[in-house]
Image (cartoon, rainbow, N blue to C red):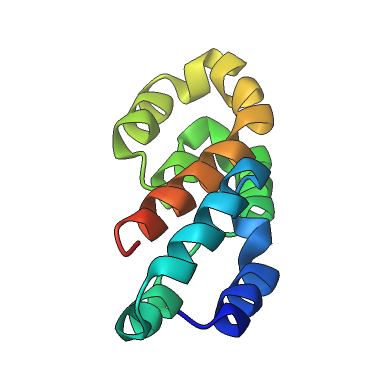
Length: 111
Protein backbone atom coordinates (compact mmCIF):
# COMPACT_ATOMS: atom_id res chain seq x y z
CA UNK A 1 0.00 0.00 0.00
CA UNK A 2 1.13 3.54 -0.65
CA UNK A 3 3.14 5.02 2.25
CA UNK A 4 1.12 8.22 2.02
CA UNK A 5 -2.11 6.29 2.72
CA UNK A 6 -0.44 4.47 5.60
CA UNK A 7 0.74 7.72 7.18
CA UNK A 8 -2.67 9.33 6.69
CA UNK A 9 -4.42 6.39 8.33
CA UNK A 10 -2.06 6.39 11.31
CA UNK A 11 -2.28 10.15 11.82
CA UNK A 12 -6.05 10.11 11.85
CA UNK A 13 -6.52 6.90 13.86
CA UNK A 14 -3.54 6.65 16.24
CA UNK A 15 -5.68 7.58 19.25
CA UNK A 16 -7.71 4.40 18.79
CA UNK A 17 -4.72 2.07 19.32
CA UNK A 18 -2.07 1.44 21.95
CA UNK A 19 1.33 2.97 21.27
CA UNK A 20 3.13 -0.37 20.98
CA UNK A 21 0.76 -1.46 18.20
CA UNK A 22 1.40 1.49 15.89
CA UNK A 23 4.62 0.11 14.36
CA UNK A 24 2.95 -3.24 13.75
CA UNK A 25 0.01 -1.51 12.06
CA UNK A 26 2.37 0.57 9.93
CA UNK A 27 4.24 -2.55 8.73
CA UNK A 28 1.08 -4.52 8.01
CA UNK A 29 -0.56 -1.64 6.15
CA UNK A 30 2.57 -1.16 4.05
CA UNK A 31 2.47 -4.85 3.09
CA UNK A 32 -1.25 -4.87 2.32
CA UNK A 33 -2.51 -4.38 -1.22
CA UNK A 34 -4.69 -1.45 -2.25
CA UNK A 35 -7.80 -3.61 -2.58
CA UNK A 36 -8.05 -3.81 1.24
CA UNK A 37 -7.97 -0.03 1.67
CA UNK A 38 -11.75 0.41 1.50
CA UNK A 39 -12.33 -2.36 4.05
CA UNK A 40 -9.71 -0.97 6.42
CA UNK A 41 -11.26 2.49 6.20
CA UNK A 42 -14.70 1.01 6.95
CA UNK A 43 -13.65 -0.61 10.24
CA UNK A 44 -15.68 1.05 12.98
CA UNK A 45 -13.31 1.97 15.80
CA UNK A 46 -14.52 2.92 19.27
CA UNK A 47 -13.33 6.14 20.92
CA UNK A 48 -11.56 5.25 24.22
CA UNK A 49 -12.42 8.58 25.85
CA UNK A 50 -16.13 8.17 25.10
CA UNK A 51 -16.11 4.66 26.53
CA UNK A 52 -14.35 5.97 29.66
CA UNK A 53 -17.07 8.59 30.14
CA UNK A 54 -19.76 5.93 29.72
CA UNK A 55 -17.88 3.78 32.23
CA UNK A 56 -17.83 6.58 34.78
CA UNK A 57 -21.52 7.37 34.32
CA UNK A 58 -23.02 3.90 33.86
CA UNK A 59 -20.20 1.42 34.43
CA UNK A 60 -21.98 -0.39 37.21
CA UNK A 61 -24.59 -1.49 34.66
CA UNK A 62 -21.96 -2.96 32.32
CA UNK A 63 -22.85 -0.65 29.45
CA UNK A 64 -19.18 0.13 28.83
CA UNK A 65 -18.38 -3.54 28.31
CA UNK A 66 -21.38 -4.03 26.05
CA UNK A 67 -20.21 -1.10 23.89
CA UNK A 68 -16.77 -2.57 23.26
CA UNK A 69 -18.14 -6.04 22.59
CA UNK A 70 -17.39 -7.83 25.88
CA UNK A 71 -20.90 -9.19 26.26
CA UNK A 72 -20.03 -11.75 28.93
CA UNK A 73 -18.31 -9.20 31.13
CA UNK A 74 -21.16 -6.77 30.53
CA UNK A 75 -23.70 -9.32 31.76
CA UNK A 76 -21.47 -10.06 34.77
CA UNK A 77 -21.25 -6.38 35.68
CA UNK A 78 -24.98 -5.93 35.16
CA UNK A 79 -25.95 -8.85 37.40
CA UNK A 80 -23.53 -7.89 40.19
CA UNK A 81 -24.08 -4.11 39.95
CA UNK A 82 -20.50 -3.62 38.82
CA UNK A 83 -19.07 -6.18 41.21
CA UNK A 84 -20.71 -4.25 44.06
CA UNK A 85 -18.98 -1.12 42.82
CA UNK A 86 -15.45 -2.50 42.96
CA UNK A 87 -15.38 -3.83 39.40
CA UNK A 88 -16.85 -0.60 38.10
CA UNK A 89 -14.16 1.40 39.90
CA UNK A 90 -11.35 -0.80 38.55
CA UNK A 91 -12.77 -0.49 35.04
CA UNK A 92 -12.33 3.29 35.18
CA UNK A 93 -8.60 2.60 34.91
CA UNK A 94 -8.73 -0.36 32.52
CA UNK A 95 -11.50 0.40 30.04
CA UNK A 96 -9.48 2.73 27.77
CA UNK A 97 -6.80 0.10 27.18
CA UNK A 98 -9.45 -2.58 26.72
CA UNK A 99 -11.13 -0.40 24.09
CA UNK A 100 -7.83 0.11 22.25
CA UNK A 101 -7.18 -3.64 22.36
CA UNK A 102 -10.63 -4.38 20.90
CA UNK A 103 -9.97 -1.83 18.13
CA UNK A 104 -6.72 -3.64 17.33
CA UNK A 105 -8.54 -6.97 17.17
CA UNK A 106 -11.08 -5.49 14.73
CA UNK A 107 -8.31 -4.14 12.50
CA UNK A 108 -6.30 -7.36 12.54
CA UNK A 109 -9.13 -9.16 10.77
CA UNK A 110 -8.35 -7.10 7.66
CA UNK A 111 -4.58 -7.02 8.00
